Length: 112
Length: 308
Image (tube, rainbow over all chains, first blue to last red; front, top):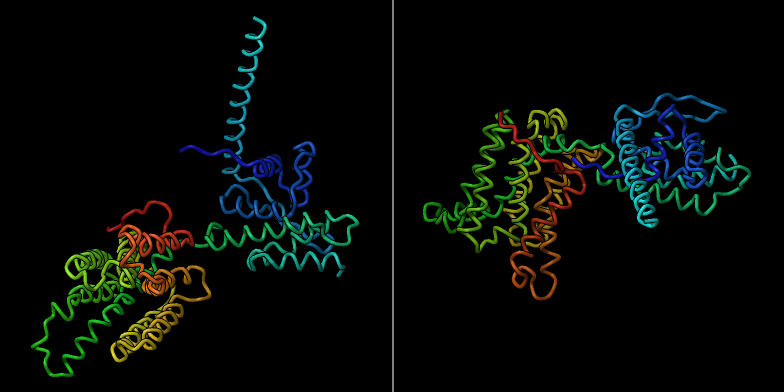
């Protein structure tokens, strides 16, 4: 079965959770950092995505804690989610590699 | 509570209740943490929250959130649909009643007055078999009953067996056959809705048949029949449960196509007479099936036939 590419917010959320479990606000900040400030997710988008990723079994609740009277829920990447992210990384790497080769060929052609 | 928190809470009120109960406080925490010294939500943030709420409502409505197991829907359908289908015999039973009252039953032409009697008898047998736990036999019977509908469309086309409100009975027969053949069956359906639902469904069908038989050709009786069927089906399947509501929608296919026919026939030019056959079929069969699929009432993946 062919797997379609991940949308950028999904890719960034999965990446944010790849190394460790994080709470909602942590994911928002991390996504901004990962994308070098280019992507700013907001709470509405994040929680709609988390709902979908949870239903797909890519993300699961890791633990909950109460900080300053507010519920803080930590999310983690599941094995299924990690496999999907890995597949996406491989896809992007293959595309980048091919693009690199074509650019090199273009340069070689241009100087010939 | 600060003004900012109050405004955020008001925006979060737009989210589906289940999501709000699960994630509302957590989302509020994230929003407050990111608010800085703002005193009211920004327009981008408000739009994002409203858009997120709309997306979740859509996922909820289409069961894309994984909260509805269509196999459970099918199990309830396999239990209650054969009983519901018996209500379709009302017109024929009205004819039969007339001949009985006239004391001339022996003179009645079954082929003219009640040509669909054998089909309804098959569905009655399917209902009994399903209730007794003979799923495989009930599935075979349902297949025969559905084929009977097809046969009626060929042999008695004057009764519009393939379109109009009768399309709903044909569709329900088809879905019931699939449900009996592929779902975990009436016994699982009984566990989901309980014994009370069966009794309620029997009472509903009897009421619908009596109203239709006594008040045949009376417009108000037709509406009352539909209202009783809707109320009885919804109460039997369980209005509180998402699975139950979807099962009810499947069982109400005859009501859906009846209403569809009423709307289309109200348009000058009489849709059923003037529209191409393919369009009529697409309208009475395709549209209801698409709606059921979209709402997660039917399995979206290929069905595995389990007759064993």
